Length: 175
Image (cartoon, rainbow, N blue to C red; front, side):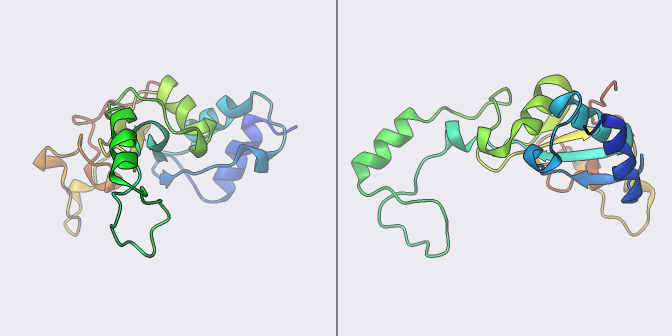
């Protein structure tokens, strides 16, 4: 059975460390049996990495099909067949809120992290991400970096996570 320590050692073998910024998308099934379950993976990530970015989308609650007639040949999301179907889906969709649960299709790990670890979550209703700052740092001091932390938009968008986390603007995890 895999332990949290095994996962931590594996992450370190990959070269990850407290200063690493990591985008995490996992499949628990690929790990096999884990002592402590998903929480053990969360703890290993928190113990090893400095900054984590996990998906936090709410498509299952907030998503609606595209309006009928909209041409999007390479988009996986379906179009509504009629305006009535679109209006019905729109009226059933829940407005985005930071405390909405994460879409179950994204797995257990992002939702466990959302519920148990202090984080920032971007406000995109469908393609949201959540950021976890374990090791406070800011790249602002690097002359070649285009840090956007000073613009105040850090709470709104986590896509450029590594460039805007600062100890002042973030809620760092206590773990």
